[in-house]
Length: 249
Image (cartoon, rainbow, N blue to C red; front, side, top):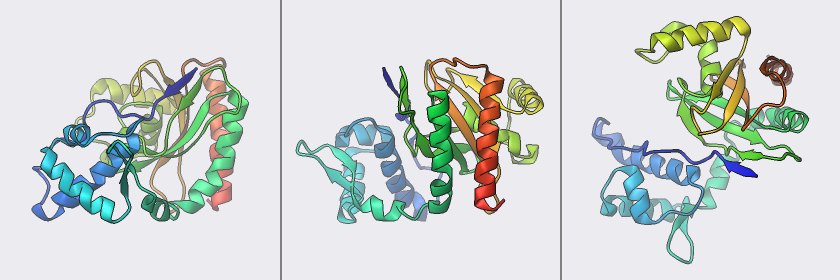
């Protein structure tokens, strides 16, 4: 059984009315790329416009520019997908960290039979998956693609990042219940979640702190855990230590 956790639920695009006028077009163009990266299929212009929260004509103008730069392409049916021009841009993004982390993520994924990922903090309040590894053999494979984003107040990877942040850097107005949960997670040394980001999926995550890098976390995602959470967390801690040593931390 394969479970795809890479599609964001609901529209995160919304209107950019609160953005400065000079950055609105750029912000929308970036959101186009994020929406296409998160989708599990090619999208029509109408679907993209709906996700972006703009009129079809606005989406069309954005797409024309992105197509001119090879960042977006269309299939035979006119539906939209990411273009090959992104490969050149993506090749240098956190290259060293991805290169160093992937072997450790693969080891954890194959040892535990669960998808293992590394997430980093972006925009002060979201966790984005930088790189992930799926097990070679597993009854249920969870696909969690790089680029998947969710608030750090939900999900194991996000909450593990919260563990490493001072309270002054937490998102505003954190509920008391979540503050208590973070305190409990600090005491046991890892974060956990169930059914928070993607229905039916659970996660266990630990913080990862590297010099010169944003706060990060390592997590495993699965439909069910065959091992105790504390045992899984200990294996993640060992992987985090290995990555830190390899990174020179």
